[in-house]
Image 1 (spheres, one colour):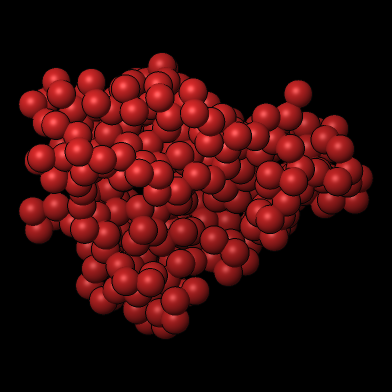
Image 2 (tube, rainbow, N blue to C red):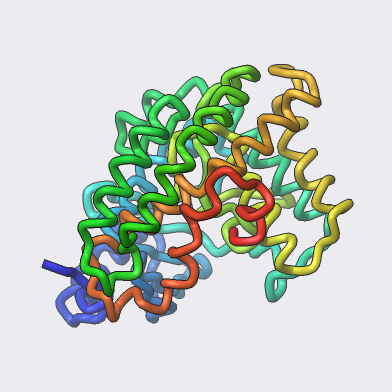
Length: 329
């Protein structure tokens, strides 16, 4: 049965329970709540703004399909506390998270180039730190999209998308399924390119842009891990470069952002090999983007997700084409 979680997040019963959790979690820290207000409810999460005697706090409850954010956040903060937005409280079972207020990195999607480069560098540092913990992340429920699984995963999701109602935004009709499956030889060649550099799989944020990172004590902290998967690290460039392109960052400056992430991996391969791997990973990254939407939308009512059809439908069509992927981040 289709489920629209926005209905539950708008109910009095949910508010009573969520508010009680917030107050209890903050009381355990010695903080007194003075007000709680709804900030935003979307199909993937509900976010609340909390005023306390210690400052502003934020609470979030994820769609069950994105609940792995809590485990990913807990592990990432344990391993690299200076690179991740610190959780004040986490309830993995209920997919709930509390954080302190933090400065976003942008104004209406815009920021200095140096900020974008620094975000890429921070992403690379976090990925390096988490690479030895890939198995732990998978065991904790973070989706496993490591390269050796991609071809079988694409086959499975294409078949499942074909079984959805024809009106569903994630439905793939016969010709669309055939087009995606015809790309599999190309995908295998790209996977061979990734094999040549042998970068370790690690946490791939899945949606890393300026709005999902923050400035705390002068350092960039990465947050919002709801779309994160364990995958090839360089797929993160899809959104980093795509959102920069969408905000008018030119090709030369996008190359600096790209270099910011690649530099983190310079001890693993030479620059030409990393450049080739980056192109291949970006070209394959539609799998990660499709997976994030699939988990949120495959069981949702059509009217709850129809507005996202323009974002969803092109994703698998970009497979094998790095330029198309960046144009549709």
